[in-house]
Every structure is written in C-alpha cells, then in structure tokens.
Length: 199
Image (cartoon, rainbow, N blue to C red; front, side, top):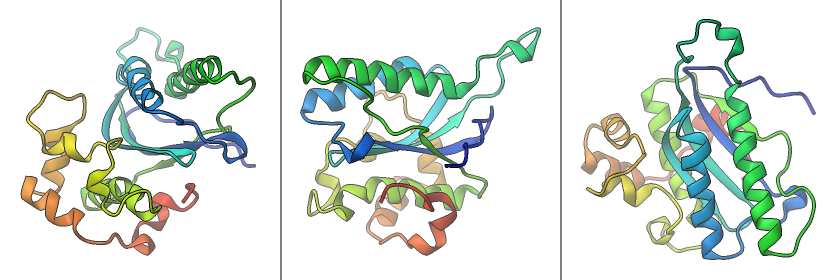
C-alpha cells in the first residue's frame, strides 16, 4: 500500500477508517459516545469539524479542516496533525479492548484521508454524502433516524463544536441544508473525494 501523504496545516480532509479485518468498532451505544468524546479531546484542538458519521458496520467518516500552522518560533517543531488522529484511534482501541475483552490492533492502518481541493459546493455535497451513509448501508430507512451523525446538530440551536454556521452557509441557509439532504448524492461527481473510502 502506498504511504498516504501527510496531513497539511490549513487544509480540509475527508478522514475515514475501519476496523481491521472489517471488525466492528462500535458494539454498543457507549462506544459511539466515547469515540466522540475522544474526538473532542484529540481532534478539536487541531481541527475544525464540519461533519461526521459513525457506522455500526465497522467504519466512520469525518470532514475536518486542519487548523493553520501554530504560531511557533520554530515551525519545524510543530507536531504533525496526523499524530493527533493516531492518538484518538489508539486511545479508543485501548478502551474498546478493555471493555470487550479483546487484544491487538482495532483499526486498519494507515487511516484514510482525501484532501478536499474543491470549492464549497463539493464540500457541501460531501457533507450530504456523509450524513446519508446509514441509509445507504441499510441501517435505517431514513438517515435522519440515525443518531450517530452530525445531521441534527447542524439544525439545532444547542451549542456545538461543529462549524455549524460555515456548513449551513455552504447551503445558503438551514432550509437549503434540509432540501439538499432530500436529494441523492451523485457518487460519480464526488468520486475524487470518496474514491477509496470504505463504502
């Protein structure tokens, strides 16, 4: 397998990963909650999150923007942002293994990442694609019924770590957000952004 390019400061990425040998990585509700808690601990300090979806069949999707390079006297000393994602996966794997009497690696390595070079239009449709994943996989009749995605948080007034205002701006308004989610995403147009993900 070709070694993936390192994450770059200031860039947007579609991040995804799955369980090694396609093992399930979420077995009960507390697993989903804990994964999101670890995202807040390890990812939030170095990246802005636009969307996420955690799937029970062994994988997840994140759409994030890595923050700009920290203001350091010597930028070369900055820890690579990929390390924070590795810390997330390692911390989750250790807790998961303890909880489920399991040993060994949990996630496939390296984790998947696709840089989103396109404009906000394509980023918006990638948000829709991520949110619609549970319906695509047949877990629910409507993706709106899946509790482990960021869809409802974008339409809520409750505080959130998501970049809600920016994401809704991609759709012009909350109504545009909901209307876009009623449409089926065109995987052919999004292929450069999902080409080698786990769907």
